[in-house]
Image (tube, rainbow, N blue to C red; front, side):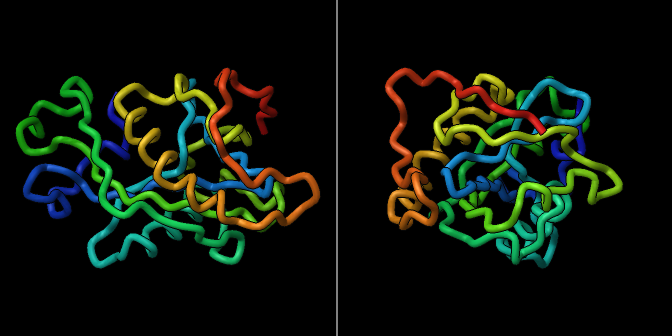
Length: 194
């Protein structure tokens, strides 16, 4: 199945065949991360999307945040971003035959955002074509088995690089953890899906 996220805009491919994209790791004050369940699928992912012609990565991030999660810029604070593009290749079986040879995958700048609003401000149906049909908060280091396989390494790279920004954040609420050190057992928490 080819999703819109995997349809390249030929004008936006770099010379190596990668489409510029942003990824968003949205954390609440407990340093739990937002996971969206892809509509009509059983795969979970972070919000992400392509950078349009003329957009900066920050502008694309705010647009994608509104389109996919229904959040506005005043609902979040930027804590950090990846230093460089992180790339993943899309397997050829996911790419239309006529695009093979030109389109390889995505290159992404990842943003770590602090969610400063209320859970009820999340609106998955803010867009006419929603990406997600459910969402949940999960531990920062939750295992990535529910993420589509070819994206897992990039997710791990983004989480690893951006964790340093959480460590530096002061505690905002009583009992809120400030150290996203991975747990030794890596067992998934009992998440509440919304």
